[in-house]
Length: 272
Image 1 (cartoon, rainbow, N blue to C red):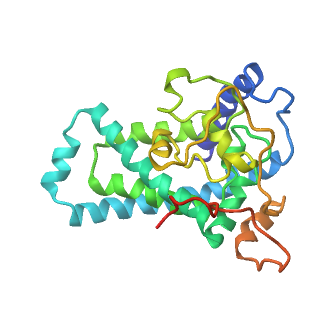
Image 2: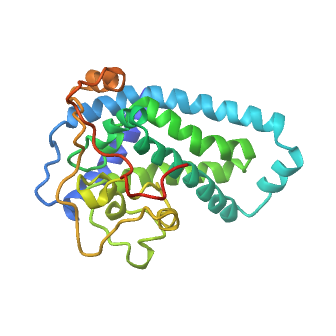
């Protein structure tokens, strides 16, 4: 299993590093940029915790679905055309992703967990792994639990998980790929980079993981044409050390410390 993981990560690096050098969004960004070692630690150690949590969520969701979701409905859903199943899974999962992601930005206790991910100041495929395990476990509960509970076919679920993984890497990557007329249909680096931008107009925007149209529907979309963020990151003082990042959400906040604003006061479409 360990050898398979190493081979997988090497494959990802071999694919993304050349693409980021050939078509970069930020031309002067180094491969071994600041805090790359921290992100390697997240990839290895947090990845183990996230994987274990994901497996438990999937197993529990399947068991609960078999117990409480009618077998006839499960058979009907699993019997639909493969492409239709994948499309429905994408919608259900990304709606769950959108709302849990938005909650992470709304509530201070959740934001301090999610701020680890938003501490990224240089976007690339490796930075996609800088995320607190609790963040990812809660996110996977919202995205994976419903679709495994319902009982889609194994083939459709595998296809979705493949798309989910590779698109997550792509949208964080330092790659400048224009999506043209599909820019509001499929999430791109352009779309997700604005979510990570530390600029007033882009705060609390672009919560969807795969389908930007969801942000359009809920009034949280921001992706101006022919424009790119000037800086990324967060004003929340997240530490640079991996161990400190793991404990950061649970440490008392200093009286003079202010977190980055979350869901602006004039946003009337906030979570109810």
